[in-house]
Structures are given as C-alpha cells and as structure tokens.
Image 1 (tube, rainbow, N blue to C red):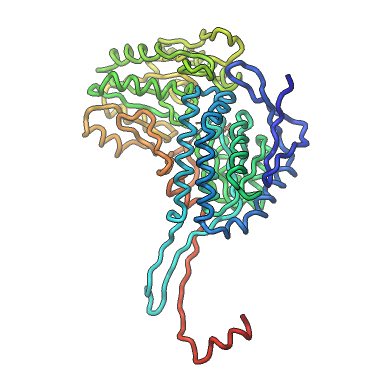
Image 2 (cartoon, helix red, strand yellow):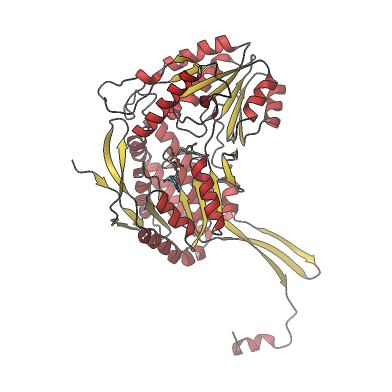
Length: 498
Ligand code: NAD
C-alpha cells in the first residue's frame, strides 16, 4: 500500500513539496505508517507567507460582519463534519473517538466566539475630552500571523488560533504538526467549502527549519505557539528578536491538592479522568495528586479502583476508554520515566508497562500507571512525563500542599478537592498557577475565556483566545479629532483637490 504524502495548502491550492526530507505519520493504534509529512523547503514556506501577505489588504478591508458570516459557515461545516474530523484525529493521534469529538466541540466554541467579532472589535471613544476634541481608539489587524502547534490537540489548538486571527482581519500561515497533520489538512478543505478567499489561511508543513523561516520572515507580524517549554522559549526569543509579537503556551506539571474533607468518590473519579484521559497527553492533565496523609489510604484504594476500570484499546474501538500514545518515541520516553521512578525509589503500585492489546501487537500502548510516595526531588515528581502516569505525593498539611505545588517551575493549572470554602478560597488566592479548579480536575476555561498559564508554562503577555485573543491579533490606533467650522463656500473648493 502506498503511503499518502501530505501537501501544502497555499492560496486555496494543494501543492506538492519538492523536499527530500519526510516525517512518518503513524496510526498509533496499529503502529503502521499511514502518511508522510514534508519538511518544506524554505522557498515553499516563503511562498505561503507571500500568499498570506497578498491576501491581507482585501481581507483586512472586508467588513467584520462579512468576515463573521464566513465564520458562521465554517462553524456549520465543522458541526456537519465533526465525526469525520474526529475519526481523522483518532487515527493520527490515538485519542478515542469520544475524546476526539470532545476536542472538536471545544474548537467549535472558539469559532463561535469569533463569530461575535463585530462586537469584540469595539474600541473606545470619549467625546469632547478636550475642548472641541474627540478621542477614539480603534483595533486594526496586525497582518500575517503564524500558528505553530503540538501533536496532542492537532485540530483544537489551531482552532484556538486562526478563527480569531482571521475574524480580526489578519491572514494566517499555519505550521501543522508534523506527527499529526491530517486533521488540520482536512480543516483546510472545510475552509474552502465555507467560501474562504485564497491566501487568507495557508498551511505549511515541517519542523525546526520551517519554523525558523517563519520566525525570521519580515512579513510575519505575530506568532502563536503551543508546545513544550524548551521550544516555546526558543520561539519567544527568536520571534521577539525579529520584532514580532508572540504568545507561547508551553508545558506543565499540574498538581491537585486532595484534602481529608473532599468527596472521595468524585475526587478519585475526577483525578483518574484528568490523569489518564487522552492517555495523559494533555497540558491540563493532572499527573500529580498531592494527598493529605489523613485521607491517603482510602484515596489510594479508590484511585486504584478507578484505574482498573480503564479499558485500553484501539482508539477507534467504541469500547476503548484509553487509546495508545502518539508515537513509538513518546512510548519509549514515558516507559523510561517509569523505569526512572522505580530506580529513584517511588512505590510503583500500578505498572502499565506490560499492557498488550489483542489484535494490535504493534500499537503504542501503555496501561495506567501509578506511583505512590513520590517526592519533589525525584525526576518523576518534577518533570512533565506526558503519558498515563499518576504520581502521588503525600503531605501532612494544607500549607505543605501549597508549598509543594508552588515550588514547581510550571504554572499551567492546579486543582483543589475539598468540601471547605475556606481552604478552597485560600488555595485560589495563593496558588501560583494560571488556571485553577475547585473540585474540577481539568480547569480549562471554555473558549469564551482565555487560556492563562503562568511561569514556565507561558511566555508572552496576552494569552490565547477569549478577550486576550482579540487584543493579541489587533493593534490599537488612537485618533484625536478636531473639526473646524467650514469657511463660507468651502464645500465648492473640494472639486479642485479631492
Ligand atoms: P514540541 O514543542 O515538540 O512541538 C511543538 C511544535 O514546535 C511543533 O509544531 C514542532 O514542529 C515545533 N518544533 C519542534 N522543535 C522545534 C525547534 N527546535 N524549533 C522550532 N520549532 C520546533 O511539542 P509536542 O511534543 O508536539 O507537544 C507536547 C507539548 O505541548 C507538551 O509539553 C505539552 O504540555 C505542550 N502543550 C501545551 C499546551 C498549553 O496550552 N500550554 C497545550 C497543548 C500542549
């Protein structure tokens, strides 16, 4: 069987890359290579930026309600095709169909937010602020915007970016994820079906070199990135050094604090879902439970019970609760962390390494894994593992729990499970993460709000989507108006110069 070779999408046309360098796209459930991603030539990337730059003046000049009409049609296309899109995501990423459908639904919310752009773009105005003078601040598009994103939400994360960027009047070049490019490519066809003018959204493919060409291109004005902190820092520094505005959403090590007065059943279920859902490949996963020792024994029993219920299998099997990891490299890396945890002396109370799925001997499977008695000094207690591995850290008090969480260099999300309003409020006020859940395991704000990581989990100023998204993708223009009373007969003179 011949392997599909991905094409670039430039000015609404699909183009073959002339590169000699290709990256495999697996079906993680079967282990087979289903497609290949080109590492585009620099000239191909430049052509995409030129197409976006060419489309920019007319698109920026299109009235916002007209741009919104296009987004309404795109939303309808996404809704109609969501199951098809979800099955592509499942096949390239290993999410279950239910998880993939959920991720598309989250992405559609952003499109719905973007449909309100005529309202979101409203500026500020004060009449007669100085005698006879009015002051107005407008929001105008910035130009060509770039989106670079990770493998773990290959359709939802680009939907965090381009709908708001184009709603604001910008044009876009997406650098689709090289390991999971198929769902993004599929969405390009939906854009065409929805009537998108050529050049407004383009898609290139590749890795480091492709990104570097984009970051240095003089016609690129803004860069949105989602991925690891190592790469995010490079993106932030390089793009900023080249005069572009940047938002870089990065990796995480989210902790949940479990207090003795929590609702045990719901807490264990919430943490199991947050730790093992999407096979742990979520920047808002909860891979660490910081458990008060007064409840640690029943908590461990309950979480083990929940983990045992998880059926691992092919992503496309409707009975599967947890699918495979995305690539053999990630599978090896996560297994390496489990080996490391054992050698560091943590108690491995559930070992997913022996997991096998009948009929899929070459899939990238790993079962739910739980370590107890993990400490902050251990590598598995500090680093992002990005797989279905839950670490339990035991603490003696609420204060110790706060200390453990706040010493992490990452600040994406955290959660507290308690029945106490007092401790919940203390936690919300003092915790050093940008997103906080109170009895909510995955405190991801819906698309109408912004996604607000802190510390090493975010580089930049304005966050992704919601109100911050509109501000990021526009620049302000302040106008001072003064009008003089026309002289007698002035209107007749216009013909001489107008
Ligand atoms: P990654 O950083 O390896 O890759 C992200 C993107 O950067 C890809 O498109 C890749 O092609 C590109 N890239 C890789 N190396 C590069 C380099 N040296 N220079 C320039 N570009 C480069 O991330 P990943 O493994 O695809 O995704 C997983 C990571 O993403 C996790 O760390 C996860 O926490 C993070 N993530 C964060 C959020 C968030 O909102 N904070 C959301 C989803 C995922």
